[in-house]
Image (cartoon, rainbow, N blue to C red; front, side, top):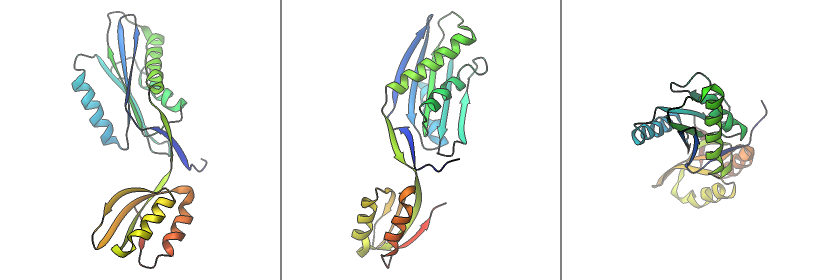
Length: 202
């Protein structure tokens, strides 16, 4: 697998609707970072749509391609979760969840009809939200005296690192995501600061 320095995702939630023969398909997309985010969003949608017959979904998390899940939620096997994931993958997205909520309209759509409905609803919701490119980051912990704060922040800004946590007292601790393709430059820059401890986070 080739080294990835960037990935594509969404930053905002969106909703789109598709109708077929009386059935209504509401597609929701969410940016997510971990499985817990997915569980919360799905729970919220089930509360919001208690009368819906199906809450089908697919998500993909992380840049290695291994963390994904699909669910047909009672629809015939392969007719919902896979087409939803197919749309996520067609746009090469990760850190995203799409849930399609179905209200049954009284007419059976059959397997091809279902696949088309879930695929179309997912495609529509992805057209409603901007896709953003982000740098793949490696997380590090920095430890330093408060007097070093300006130098540390200068490097963080210069290389577009992401601050994940910042505990600033007399002795400071920052967790930062360092863009993978700039990792060596950033480590060199921090290496020149004498009183800054730096180590990778698991």
